[in-house]
Image (cartoon, rainbow over all chains, first blue to last red; front, side, top):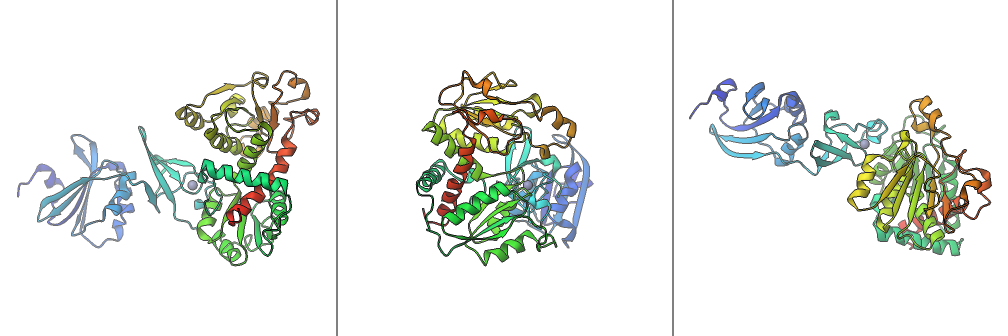
Length: 153
Length: 301
Ligand SMILES: [Zn+2]
């Protein structure tokens, strides 16, 4: 197997999933959204790595774990340019981009303090609106939009 | 027809027109006991006497009985019962729920928790769709049509939910708009963009006199103190527009003045006696429109 400089910085995994091109500042939001703190698998996290096209990026390698697309698309809000690499026997057997889901459920908090979801035990639900300056979330309940910057997992 | 009336966006143009047609049938025959034996819940989690009386009268005129509360003092809600539990409990008792709530999105949530039709009678600053439908009904009744009218919206165009909903609902009918507002309270950019995308023209002014004479509908609104976090801001704009009869000399003969009521100082009493005042008729129309909403959602029209 050919070993690149990058793989030396963050150990390669034999089997599992590598999430690459995560903005460093949102790395731990991704960890939280995917609930990796409670995942029993071996996880390697690299932050502030140099990237030619991306400035500084984060990377997460999860050994022996594969995700459903729906599950991974949930991170689109904080890492819209992330790539997903499926690793089998140290090789990338599948590589794809995150797609932004039309609707996100149970992630993030509505920025409107008068929204019912901020006062009752209700899972948030947003429609995603992709605009030139980023992604906006339209709240299913209060009908107000929240900018992604305001999104708290 | 959708199961519930939560947001004016849930209704297509045809569905809105259907409600208006049924409302005009209700106006011709004001007491129809089509809901004999039915029970309507009017749950007012914040007080609004005007809206509650209008809905309760509508239900009574259809022959239904009404249960509910007019504010949450001395109810289980003030003891901390969740909205979900209140709605679940009431859903076991009645046939339709009409609710007003200070939190935005509360009615949408209730419609998901309940198996019954839910009518949103106001959720905070968000939606108040029966107001929009009664505004449309009054426009059609006073002008004989909805298409091709010039609507001058006056007052708080920034926070006023009634003008935002009316603007979107009327966008189906080839309107043109005038926005009369002080600099602090102008129509938000997202609504102007909404119109621009649909090729609907609008003009903006800060002067009430500027477009009085070239509109068909003058839609006046109250500047609502509770929308302002800064009391000084409110003091600056609260009496910015005051319409009196002397200003109406050059208006179109078909021009009608609407106002969601209650008014404070924005329309002088001497306007009431002019042929242009339509706001009391508009309030009366609210009852016919609410009769129509209840009858349609319960499948009787
Ligand atoms: Zn919300």
